[in-house]
Amino acid sequence: MGKIWMKTRYDSSMGMEIPHSWNFANAMYGFRELGAEIIPYHTIAEIYDQVKEDDIVLDYIDQCETIFHKFGVRADLPDYPSVLRKFLGRKIWKDTINSISSDERKWSAGYFVKPAERCKAFTGKRISSLHDLIGCGSCYEDYEVYVSEPIDIVAEWRTFIRYDQILDVRPYGSVREDRYEGFLYCYDAGVLQDMLKAFRTWDERPAACSMDICYTEDGRTLLVEMNDAYALGCYGLPSIQYAQLISARWSQLMKHKDEYDFHDDRGETGWQI
Image (tube, rainbow, N blue to C red; front, top):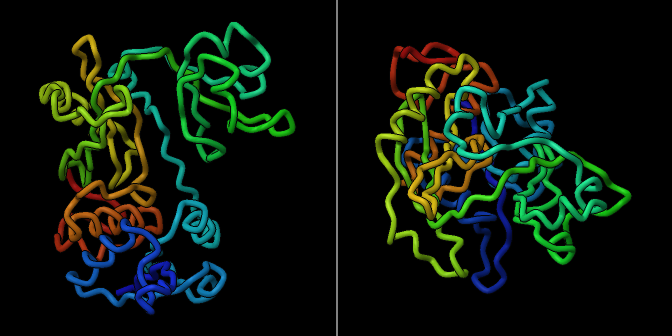
């Protein structure tokens, strides 16, 4: 069984090493309950040569991708898989950030703009003025972005999926007037079930991921985007489930048995439906 490497930091007020983030702490509790060997570290350079293919690294996206690259692995989960596009409820296309910032028709249209896959230049947001472009890069760095028609979201949830099953659906707030009001709304469970059925038809689907959904002002339940399990915040998901979610995806990417699945019918790199 492989090791679990966890990024930590020294907390001077407590005089001790602690997990570098709440997400790492939650994963640590889960893996500890699952009987894993957990090894703390500070920087990915410290452990790079020691990490083996059957290990798991609890770190941020860039650092995880450094380890994937070491083993020739590319984690490339699309934000909007073709099998789920009918649930988007809006048009989405690609452009470049410089094209948007230099065209008043684009930066004043109120489009939602976010970096395309594998680009983390800024957090996605609605662009309605030049002021909104602050922090979205510079003219010296032109990169691809997703652009989507705006929708009036009043509540959002993160749907955690592991081996084709929904583990939990966790709220992560509302965008309405900077106040959390997500508890006033509820998604359509039937639409969510239809999304899961469509997800299961995806031949190259991940063993673990999130399917973020929202409820709109006009009463629709829509897909916001997909996110890869190795790069997910836990949003209150129980620690053991969170650890198993991470393990499922790392095992699939690294092409070895998921030691924390505790089922005999998953296969080495996949699962039976």
